[in-house]
Image (cartoon, rainbow, N blue to C red; front, side, top):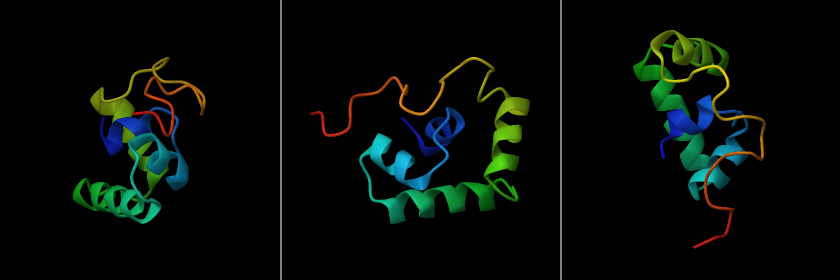
Length: 76
């Protein structure tokens, strides 16, 4: 599971990304910032557009917050 796939599937808040990947919020924010910088994207909204345009994210995948198909927080 990657930052880009988590962010592209409805995880907008840094805290949600961090919980999904079981990493600290500061680490999640750093990763998101680095992705935006490397891809020369302005912000997360621009990243969503980029995701759809490149096929990284397709309409109907993922879902609303709380529906990520990963292990529950604290599992494992």
